[in-house]
Length: 160
Ligand SMILES: CCCCCCCCCCCCCC(=O)SCCNC(=O)CCNC(=O)[C@H](O)C(C)(C)COP(=O)(O)OP(=O)(O)OC[C@H]1O[C@@H](n2cnc3c(N)ncnc32)[C@H](O)[C@@H]1OP(=O)(O)O
Image 1 (cartoon, rainbow, N blue to C red):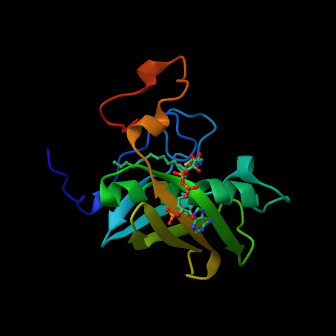
Image 2: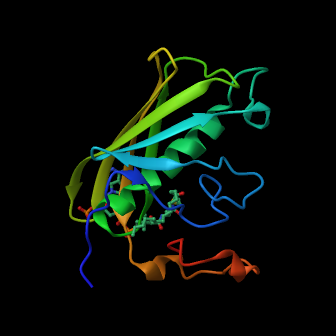
């Protein structure tokens, strides 16, 4: 079967329990990531569960979301890829409850290496954070570690 690049629109979650995008993870961010003109987009609102300082989103929660949006780069190339490195510049505090628009791009590919960038802006377009990541393409065997007991959480709508 030949792989075809995805069309613009919503992309499938990684799997139901994914901390970033899984629809059945009660602790997850429930991200919905879209492909638009070659870029990955997610509109997200951090809530009180993600606070660090009162009213301000924890940097680790932002890192989680960025890592997961980057993880959708696999759909751009039709191969799974995982984080080798992730670097974030936090430009402004991200208020809890505020809309945050995240855009990520695959800047270039060198063999297995995917070089990615991302930016998050608020509703006025002001930059909140930027990030760079190196993802490495892996084969599906990479994910064949211990499985969660509830394997019924997987379905044909998910990759893993
Ligand atoms: C179909 C698509 C579906 C998409 C969905 C998929 C689901 C995914 C879900 C996503 C969920 C969200 C995301 C998540 O949460 S992903 C989960 C978090 N990440 C992980 O668990 C990954 C853990 N790490 C590993 O498993 C291994 O380290 C991997 C497999 C990543 C690489 O181990 P491997 O032994 O294979 O590779 P290597 O270390 O020799 O390195 C290879 C090359 O890279 C170069 N290098 C290394 N570091 C750097 C650096 N900092 N700057 C520049 N270059 C660097 C290095 O020199 C070498 O270059 P070269 O000598 O080859 O030229």
